[in-house]
Image (tube, rainbow, N blue to C red; front, side, top):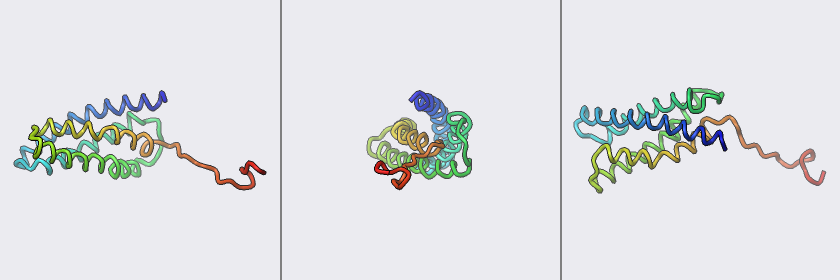
Length: 144
């Protein structure tokens, strides 16, 4: 439990830095892409995913061993998809329907995706522990 809490705190610290990266790059990309906020959101999110992965690998879960390439792939397939789908859906709703400002809508979308991303990272991407259940047989059967 202590390990999970420590990882949660580190995850949130990296996440706060990631929020700054994402909001700054979103503002920049939105200006460069002439108001195409969904495209700008995808580009900012990708940079933030790479930023956060590097910090999680070397800081949040640095004690874990494993293939960096495999973890990057898993990170993109899980955290990336949760963040991408969550950001795009929420950004569309919050900007087009709720008429929130770009950066406020993005900050809300980030918070909404955070808990799911932590759980996926902690229990799948950066863990080396695997649940193994023995198959009952002659050596493990309670009736042996």
